[in-house]
Image (cartoon, rainbow over all chains, first blue to last red; front, side):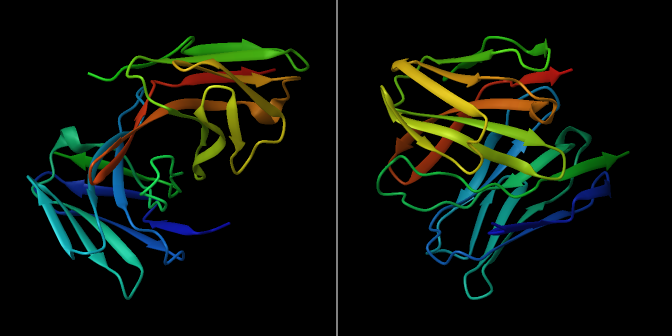
Length: 115
Length: 114
């Protein structure tokens, strides 16, 4: 059942610092690797995602690094801001050709950015 | 702008009651999902539906059932609520666009069973 392991469970980072969250998976059939962001009182929302044919994807201050051989991918938040304080979930998936894929969520990382 | 709405934000029910959680999406998505979210466990899939009247069990379907009579509406039913079903329930719908797979979530229903 433990197909996806996310770490750390919680993280406190100084404003302006780099936040790093890791996700390890077991299923080598996974072919789409998203990160979701959830603010208190809201449902999760897609933040950034990567496919296995690239090793890194950057969108603004957010970067995904993907290591296929290690079966790991990570989220890096550069210049972390208080507004980034949220819970982050990795959610690798498979069956992307069919449109009815199931997401396998990690256990979540509560990120707090302090001034 | 995709919108997924859930009928209640907070719900308090007694043990043994039948509970209905309703979810509506406005983007004509074929796929809809019900998850429960618990601290330290992340989101766990209860049921999903890929078409009207079609449903499939997720990872934790025990104690739950679902109904999808119309494309835009997906209901989660707790036949006889128990205290271990106290949780946050999240509904999602699925968009498949070229090269991307995104699930759109509602705001959640926090259910307390006493």
